[in-house]
Length: 567
Image (cartoon, rainbow, N blue to C red; front, top):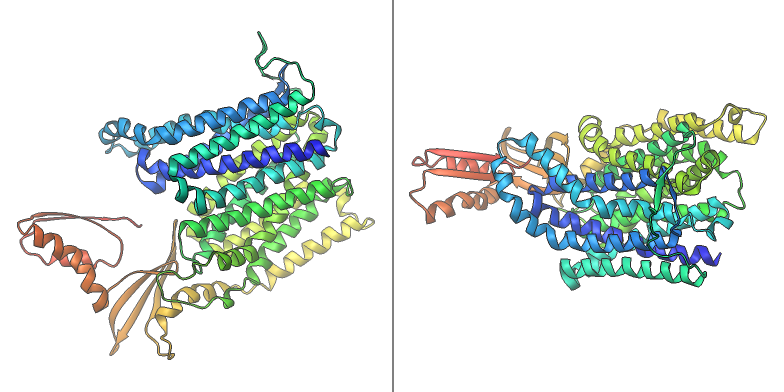
């Protein structure tokens, strides 16, 4: 037990450092690759690809001559070295490659491909090392004496809780106190401390293995097992569904919560805390519940049911609608709303992952291979889930049907992983699975499919009705887009449209009423006052077209180029 505690503490530090580095890379990506939205997506894709590569190496390799703790320490030092180097070097790299980007500006497919290749190569070494750390650590000889399900549950859980601490520390304190470079050094220091503890632990075991053996590689490729494809597909599916749900949840909460970094950090921390605590619960009870892996269909059906119930019982009525610039900015209230919506399913997801790894280990045998193989498929699913939610589900069927589809996805995975004997009514497990399946079908059958209108109305109500209950405007168009939820409101006067207002999530971005027109037309009048002889105008805008209309009314202008930053 002492060994698990030490290694859990090491992985906790590793989780803090990894999440802080990821946050810093995302912040700096716009300086290097331009277009902050696309650059963030490229960095995230490259980050997941690097983790997947590390998992793939672990899935197909054996530790050779190096003791696992020595190899883990080397990996953490690599994370610290290359993680800090990337933070310090990204702004300089942006300056160096800007001429290349300017040359390829009119060839966007080539430019996007170049950005993707560069971001992958830049993050290749640290992210691959991050993907290897957990699988390598489970090969520790002393840890092998403990129950594998218990060990993987606790190690994975504390590593994820470290990511929770990193998400909160990085945004709430470190960046403000020490800046980006100081935060990078702090993250690197955390990785170095984890490496030092691992080396001290190995030395205390009396190990005399040299750090760099002559003529030997630390890992060698060796695939001698038949992968359990059904379990691996379930691992891929659970990763994809949870990350898809995360995007859908965040979009939904933006109808109640203002979009600012602290809110995002709190919401992410709730999801990671659920996964981490669930994994610890799985590791704690694994010895007492020896057949936990056989309960995978039950856990998956519970996840599907909880997905719908968390949405149906979401305490949105407790949040008072507000027309202010920030609809809800208290981190405690954001945490409570996030906890009610996301924590139950995240907790079950945390219980699921170690159970799947333990069941894969029975088929594969090798601990590092089974951990790397399961994590590889889970990471691939986690990389595809956000893309599926952002570019397919939300723009086509909206957040509510996306939640229903994810719940159905959990049910399909339960059918896939269950054995024929699991459905036998001669066993209690068969009755439980049949009962949970029936409950899920009943919930979907009686689901209030107009519930989403309540949540849309929460965002638009302050602009539709005043405090005295007088009707101000009504919604004429609603769109759930790739990045935001849009609502167009119209106010009538004497039966004719008087003005329009564009809501983005819960925030009024633009309107054509007299007050809004006055200051938005100033964006045209002010530059023209300084440069009265101007003939060419470039307008980068977002809204209802008031500023564009002001420019269009200037007779001496010959050319007006308009770039609307929102589709």
